[in-house]
Amino acid sequence: MPTIISVASGKGGVGKSMVVSNLGLLLARQGQRVILVDMDIGGANLHILFGMFHPPTTLTDFFTNRLTNLEDLAHPLANPLPLRLIPGTGETLITANLQHAKKKRLIRHLQKLDADIILVDVGAGTSYHALDFFLLADHFLAVATPDPTSVLDLYRFIKLAAIRKVLTAFLARDPVAEALLSQDFHSITEVLEAVGRTSESGVALAQQALQGFQPALILNRMTPKSRINTLHLRNLLKQYVGAELSVLGNIPEDPQVQQSILKYLPVVEFSPKSPAAQAFEHIAENVLKQIEQPEGFRNSLEEPRKIRA
Ligand SMILES: Nc1ncnc2c1ncn2[C@@H]1O[C@H](COP(=O)(O)OP(=O)(O)O)[C@@H](O)[C@H]1O
Ligand SMILES: [Mg+2]
Image 1 (cartoon, rainbow, N blue to C red):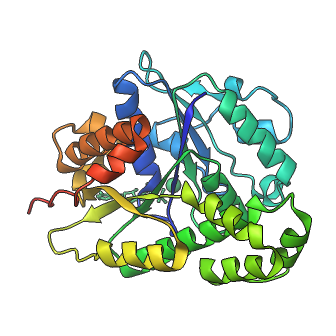
Image 2: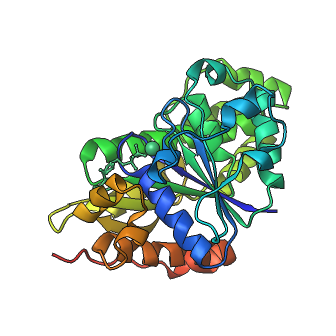
C-alpha cells in the first residue's frame, strides 16, 4: 500500500504547490514511484506548474463517475521518472457538497494506487474538505511562511484538524457523537472535557485518535531576517492542540523559484544549484527518513539549518 503524505497550509499562496511539485520530483529521482494528487478544490493548478495546460482528465471525472478507476487519471509527468499527477478539479459546485461516502471512496482508491508515495496537495483554508483530505494521510506536512498571518492560519488549521480528527473517531459511536456534533469547540481540551462528560472510555479513544497526529512543518520564503519562533508554535500546539510538531526544513526566499515557475519546471530541475533547490534536497531526505523510521526520525530532528545570507 502506498504511503500517503498530505501537504496543507492555513493560507493560500505560501508555496504549497511549489513544495509538492519539487518534493515529488526529488522523491521520484530517488526511485520512489510517486503520484501527486491535486485536492485544491477550486484552486487546482499543480498541472500548470508542470506545463500541462489542458489535462485530458481530472478528479471531476472521478467525482461524477465518468471514470471509475483513479489509476486512469494519473498522467505521467516526467518520463522516464516514475512521477505521475492526478489533476484537480476547478469545479467547486461538484465538490462543494461532496458527501462523506464519496470522500471515503476516494480514500479507498488512493490506497489502491500503484505507487510508493502519494503526495496530496490539500487546498488552503479550513473547510471540512480541506481538513478531511489532510487527515486522510499517513504523514502530515504543513507549509507556512514567516509572515505572522501565515503562522496564525497554520495554527488555526492544525487546531481544527486535530478537533476534526477526534470528532470523526466517534462518528460511529452514537451518544458521544451526538453530544459532540451539536457543539462548537475552540480547543482539544474542550473536546476532551465534553467527551468525558458523556463517556469515560471515550477520553482514551479521543487521545488515541490524536496520538498519530504529528504534523511536520516546512517554512518557506525564509530570509536571514525572518524571525519565527518555532519553539513557541510547537509549545502552543502541544498545549492547546495536543499535537507534536517537528520542523522538517526551511526553504529560502529565492528568485529562482519564480523563474522556474515561469518556465513550468520545478526549481530542482530548472536551477539545481539554487539555494531553494538545495533546501529541497535536504527536505526530501528528511521525508524519506520519516517514512522509513517515523519514531527514530522525530527524535533525531534538530533545528533546521540556518539560511545563508
Ligand atoms: N521560496 C520562494 N521564493 C520565492 N518565491 C516563492 C517561493 N515560494 C513560493 N514563491 C512564490 O509564491 C507563489 C505561490 O506559490 P504556490 O506554490 O502556488 O502557493 P500555494 O500552492 O500555497 O497557493 C509562487 O508562484 C512563487 O511566485
Ligand atoms: Mg496551490
